[in-house]
Amino acid sequence: MNKNLNIINQNSLLFLIFFNYLLYFIFETKIFFPYFAIVILSVFIYLIYKNFKSNPEIFYIIFILSIISLGSPVSDWDSRSIWLFNSKRIFFNENLSQFTNYFGSEFSHLDYPILIQTLSASLASLIGNWNEIFPKYSSVIMILPPIIIVSKILKNK
Image (cartoon, rainbow, N blue to C red; front, side):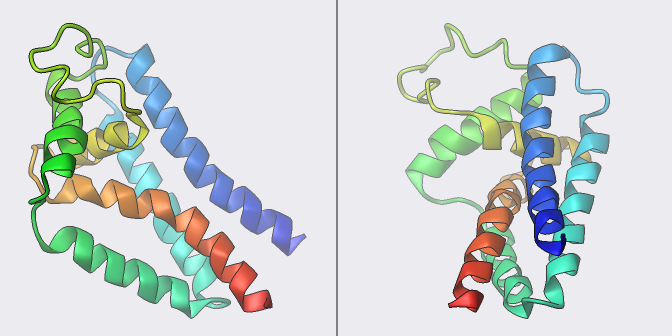
């Protein structure tokens, strides 16, 4: 039963991230996206706390990834011009309808998936303005369930 509960907890975080993505399609304004980002961060912290007793390595890995992610702004061309740029457009336009006929659309690769970018835009709306550092934390949130699964597999081996 405990094993099934862990899978449900991990899938709940991924479901909330996907639901956040769907909300950007449904609603035109971002009235409650900061509140939904709080829910996602709460489930993220709960998963870290829940797995700390059985696998303390998960906490250390997430802590190191958090320091790396929040330690400096993005300097690479790909992540700055494609991933964070699309997140920035979602944040400022408050919806996904701007993804057609945008200047430089061949440069910014609008055909790339935007699941993590919508989470980045929600995290930016949580703090109230756009910056180049905090929205990168969405990748750390997204990587937590696979880290938990891999750590359980490695612990059993």
